[in-house]
Image (cartoon, rainbow, N blue to C red; front, side, top):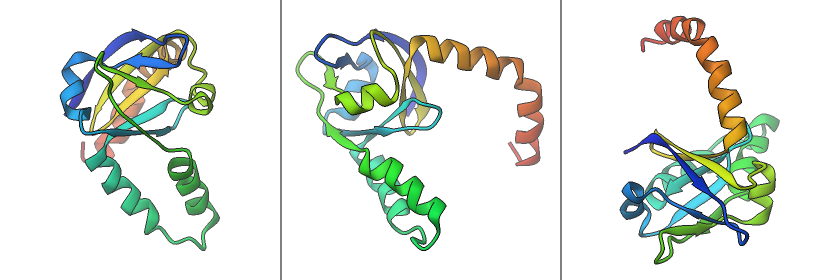
Length: 143
């Protein structure tokens, strides 16, 4: 399970240090892809296989399902954690998420999200300001 918020730096070669507590979970490899809200999603191989199977089975006759599957699947790249605990993020994914130097790694149970630190700060401030409305909507879903 991935939880927590961690600040890390991206080096000049596009390498990002994975929080130490998550390295074992990613040791057998992982997948990184375009996420929502202009962040990147990082999955273990097992979690990626579950998601990819669901996406592959969406009805391809619907434009929205094709678009979402393309966003997630075509943009994906397998990554390995090196001996220093880093992964290399491809340039096209760094560009998508506008990752420069300061990156926030956010644990969201079955995935990690990789955010530009400034965008993460803006997002969390906006979400915190709307937290009461969001909580009411989640209550309607039984949460």
